[in-house]
Image (tube, rainbow, N blue to C red; front, top):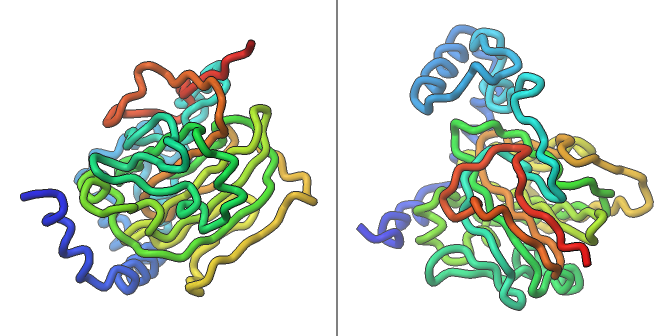
Length: 283
C-alpha cells in the first residue's frame, strides 16, 4: 500500500477529539491502573528505564508524569560542538533550505513562512539557511533541550491539524509540519536568530515550555504570539526548554551560514540528546 493510501484514515478520524480524550486520560491519577498502563507501554515500546531518573513505574502518579520523565545525571553528556542535538529521536530530514522551501519527504516540501505561522519577515531570515527535522518516537525521552545558548525573543502558537508525524505520514501528507498544530520558539544566539518548532500530532495532549508552562490547551483556533525581547530569558546550551506531553517532532531552522552537519547525520539515523549536530565555519 502506498504511503498516501495508508494515511487516508487519518483524514477521516476525529483527531482533535481523540487528542483531547487522550490528554485527559494521560493526566488521570489512576493508581494501579495507571501503573499497569505504564508497565504495558514500557514493554510494548521497549522503553529503557535504566536511564530514567526514577526507574520504578509505580512512582509515577499519571501517565504524563511517566512520559515526561527525567533522565539520570550524566546519561546524555554534551558534545563540544557549536550545535548539539536537542532531543532523543530519529532524523526525519536534514540539510539546506532551498530558497524558502524545506524538504519534508520525496515529492513534498513546505515553506518556512507557512511553518512559522505566516510571518514573512521572520521566515526571510532563514531563506537558504539550514534545517533539521527530528522525530520523537513513543519510546524516546520527551523533554526538549537547547541546541546552543539563546536568548528568547518570541513564541508563536499556530493552530492546525493533528496528523500523526511518523515517517509514513511524513511521506504521505503534503506540508505535514506546516499543517499540524505547532509552537514556534524564536531565539537569538551566537550565530544569529534561530527557531525551534515543536510540532503537535494525534494524541499529543499538549506542549509546554519552561518559561510559559503548558501552551496548549487552550486551542482557540487563532494564532497567538508572546513577545519576550524586553525580557532577559537566556537558556544555556543543553538546558531544558520544553516538553511534549505525548510524542511528536522538532524542526530547527538556522540562518544562512557555512554550517557543517555531523556527517553521521542522515535521514533515518537515530540521534541522542547532546551529541554533536553541527559546527559553524569560522573564517
